[in-house]
Amino acid sequence: MSSSTARPPLLEIANLNVQFHSRVETVHAVRGLSFTLGRERLGIVGESGSGKSLTGRAILDLVPLPGRVSADRMTFMGQDLLAMSAKQRGALRGAHMSMVMQDPKFSLNPVMTVGRQIAEAYRAHSKMSGRQAEEHALHALESVRIRDPRRVYNLYPHEVSGGMGQRIMIAMVLAAEPELLIADEPTSALDVTVQMQVLAILDDLVKERGMGLIFISHDLPLVGAFCDRVIVLYSGQVMETLEASELAQAKHPYTQGLLNCMPDLNRRDDALPVLKRDKAWLA
Amino acid sequence: MSEAAVNIDNLNVHFGGLHAVRDAHFSVRPGECYGIVGESGSGKSTILRAISGLNPTWTGTIEINGIQQTPHRPKSFYRTVQMVFQDPYSSLHPRHTIDRTLSEPISIFRLDRAEERVRSALERVGLRPSFRFRYPHQLSGGQRQRVAIARALILEPSILLLDEPTSALDVSIQAEVLNLLKELLVSSGLTMVLVSHNLAVVAHMCQRVAVMNGGSIVEETTADALRDGRVREDYTAQLLAATRSYDRAAARGLDPSD
Image (cartoon, rainbow over all chains, first blue to last red):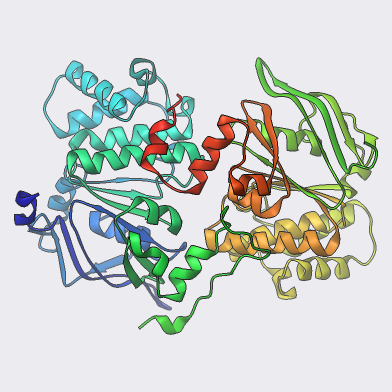
């Protein structure tokens, strides 16, 4: 690990803001978010509308118009993201940082076999023949633990299950061997057992390839069990940053609320605690 | 078995060559919330759709309050049994106000005191009367699911079928909806059948739980047994482990079935 400590952090963000201006009001979707990411699993947790997905999109330069992103500092492997042109950011995207979206049904091309889509991703990132790309794609399918890659290669997205679709998305993202992977609710649409399999694959990628992972989710107990560190967002602002192992000692009422509002097999409660939200938390 | 609110015996559903439900049997007591858990494709929603009359291609026995049901249901059936669907974003008519959505069953059944019924249904699910004049897009996901529950309650049914009522919602909103359902269960003596893929949700709501896999009910157990980890089937144990939390070793043990 001595060589990795000498390198600059994978991602450094200081005072990130995302705003949507309209004629009547300005919506401040992300407020002054700062964090540093190494080759680790960082969780970003919050409810719908807390700005967690926009944070991921801001890093990739994918915030939809009329959203405006500003920050004091945004660096990726020592490069200044703020100084780059849109074209340069585009070149980073996919090749060095990538995103896995929530629903594979909407993210895959419905009229192209999944194998060809993965092969296409390989050819987009490096020069290779169609045959080489196919081999790589088959290998990628194998690496996300699809048992019969040859058969799956020729399937269309509607012919695969949700869990397999999500693994195909991950296989595609890996084509470029990105250093940073942002996973936006990658398992929310999946059954619990399939969810575990997809998490195990992401886990391996972080450990074996030394990738950095930002895991975005509304499920705090899950993130706590899976990630190394957790950032809790409310209305675009950080409420608390915690080591995952210290989640049980969370101080902030919002974090506690997120932890306790889920039914838990280890507890028995008549009524579930309902999350309290307080505008006073926003500085 | 005449005292059961819902009695299912030897229920089979085929879709073409697919045997979606195999010899299912269970019975639900009046006032009970009965849970069915399983993964996508296990047939749990199909059972619910057969009970509600949405799927006519079943064989076997379905008894509601002791009355044997046929695939075709008379209009009066829907005053007894109502259903709440998974996705409140697609189960409410986007161009009907909440008032119109809630009034429709009243006019179908030519009931009196329409306005009073709409008001009281909204009140029961914890929404202000002013919500009547809103459209679904003006409501949050949790509020929409409340409207969907109000729509099901407006005919004052005695049996409520719940198909993954909180899966499309954030965890924080899920808590509110589950609390509402539990309140209704305790206060109004409704009988509920709750289908979910989430063991924790089912164990929170129900005393008795059926676990489904591949179209069959593999185990009928209780919430207490699940909490203590006393399960008979390997499949239930797997589901239980996956529900508790992410665990590297447990995830390894799961077979990535294609």
